[in-house]
Image (cartoon, rainbow, N blue to C red; front, side, top):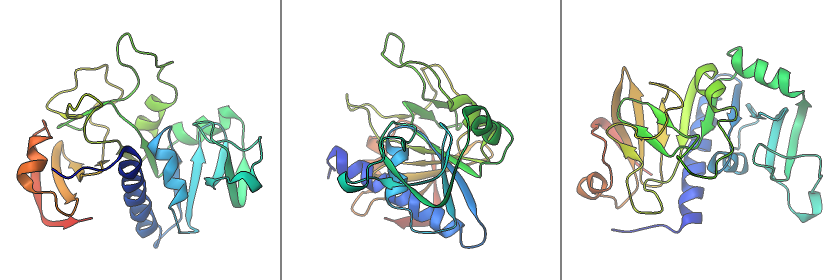
Amino acid sequence: MFTFTEEEAKIRIAKYIAKEFDEMSKDHDLFVNLGVGIPTMVADHTASKRVFLQAENGMLGVGPVADEAHIDPLLINAGRAKVTETKGCSYMNSADSFGMIRGGHVDATVIGAFEVDEKGNVANWIIPNGKMLGVGGAMDLVSGAKKVYIAMQHVSKKGKSKLVRACSLPVTGYGAVDTVVTEYAVFKFENGQMTLTAKAKGMTFDKLKAITEAEYSIAKNLSDF
């Protein structure tokens, strides 16, 4: 089976999500929260000026990662990476930032995950005995955002599918996921049903099935990316 390097995989995922947001914003402004990890990379690939990216630490109008010539030590995203600001960028305290999230004012959030199961449940905050600090804003995001996107690599570092029949790790949100994007496939959830809507060019159905534990249906208008 063809593979991508870890960096290639992350970029593919971020680019796909950014493109989808650019399409969605053609009709209206879109307010999107970006979580830690791959989600923060979406800011590097979003082209639409109607997509407004939020970091939960209180920045609304997050731009791409800053190069050496444009670093401002006070401008960081949720992952503490040095970022730029877009035109009209605004700032708020943590309470107001989470008020925006909890109040249902975020159109979509992009977060990572350890597991997503075929019912749209997501586990993304702790692996028992691991080194994660805690749930952070994830539970607020999966309950407050109108759409939940999961940006994650298809398999774990041990080669195990991260798309599972049922989550074995502590669940962050039940039935919360709308879309999962991996380097190999895109899955949508509707009424508790998991559907493959896009797959990587060159990826066969058999190969995809071999690395995906979860059961899913295939969309009639399946596309390649």
